Image (cartoon, rainbow, N blue to C red):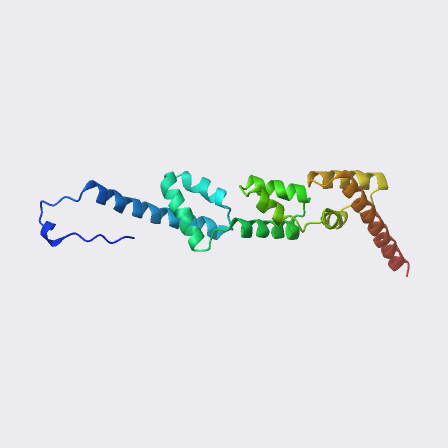
Length: 190
């Protein structure tokens, strides 16, 4: 908040601050409110500049929003490339999707094409597809091969994987499922 000094000569009861001075004070106060809202919004989870801009524009003018965004950059709370990397890491850990699907999510969050492309450059679709298959086959024991393939193919397509990647991952998943099934039967027969 900016401190405004009023000259001593004008401290009598008849003094009225000029309009520009009052507007500057109001603008600084609004910027601080916007900064508080922005910090709270970012504290919940990392955000892209576009997400923060949309949120602030619901309440504040575009001038105040721009000032607040600039302040968040100065404080190191806003960085689209860091946000994109964190988004990709999160997706890789919790809910793997194809490279194309994750890139599309980043673009929808307002990340630039170049930044999104850099963030997804280390993603390998076959690895992600196999991670999805391994998670899913836990609930698919006892299915016939045709049903197994059909269910997993739909699951992988909803996550954005191509047919060829899906087919390879499903084949590996089937082999893993059969070997685990055979190990279980061997254990029971002992």
